[in-house]
Length: 271
Ligand code: ADP
Image (cartoon, rainbow, N blue to C red):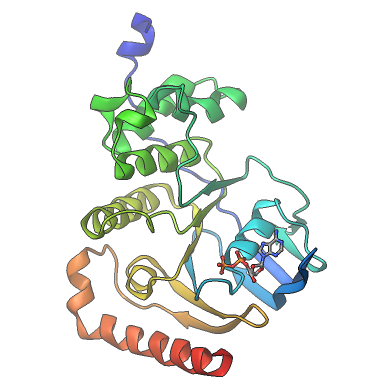
């Protein structure tokens, strides 16, 4: 590592562009050898700039498909998805994705993984950007480690830092903490909220965990299968900043009850 890079201070930076997402009557039908699957049907939604929205639903209800359409990985068979009024037709640097299993390059260090995006995008302050995000996810001591030398939680922290280091307008998260143990997951949720509160990026977070959705979100979109669609849009008025103790409060329980009622009714309908 050169001296200039070593001495470069981590400069706090803010994301200023917060994307607005909209989908109009979105439909995705997969056509495979096994036949046709309607993964999404009549899905219309708006996600406001800087909002943290959780998409909650059982396995197979179309959550990842919705995220993949927004990411530009899947083209809808009907309707459209728009970012800041522009139709989404392909992946772009204005959207970053974090997956359940980290997708880090195993032959690159933590530092190099996080620096990949900023360097590709020609960020002239790439080294300082990397320093900033390494510190934000608490991995300064591990910056020269390789992914397989880190715990699952640390690997996901690198994945999140890497996704944020390009200052996306939208952060898409597909069950990013589902493979982690309970305690690590709780810490990761708090860490994510701290990052989001500093950066203000619009977040769409897919989960099947009701408590996780309530803890994180401003709003919860509950999805149901057969066909995949949004059945309820629940505002989450819990105050911020939050820590995990909030889950024992009556207001948290009341939102959980609302979610559970909808999930139960939909499960009975599709069982
Ligand atoms: P979730 O994320 O809620 O588990 P998905 O969006 O992954 O749901 O899947 C929704 C439905 O679409 C499921 O029935 C799934 O089997 C089907 N599906 C997902 N991807 C494909 C694909 N590439 N080809 C065919 N069917 C798919």
